[in-house]
Image (cartoon, rainbow, N blue to C red; front, top):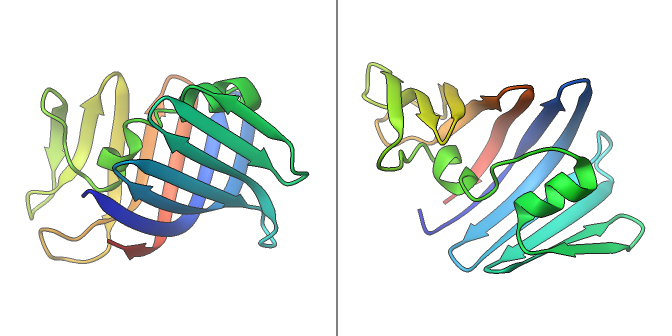
Length: 154
């Protein structure tokens, strides 16, 4: 999918640390924009990522820049997150070379291993073969990202 927008909730765990945030993500081939909110809807941070440049703006207005969104997450949050792979994973589009371990009754991915990460698709938005995921769990080692999509705008 070259473009999509989703709103949902993201839980990130890395060993002992854990955070739950709201997320509004706008994806296009040329740019990704994530807006993260706290439990009461207050803005916590945003990340804008383009080829060769990523910038995080925190709620106090301070900014941090890096070459990629993954590098930003590592530097600012101390977590290893597969930002480059997420557009494919959240839309259940399996990359050539990834290992599909399980499919559901409609032939949709249930579990995929890709670049050392395990992606578990625990719920889809409906019962059609091309419906998008509603809940997914991405993990490798102690790092776990759990996303619940409340709304899709493909």
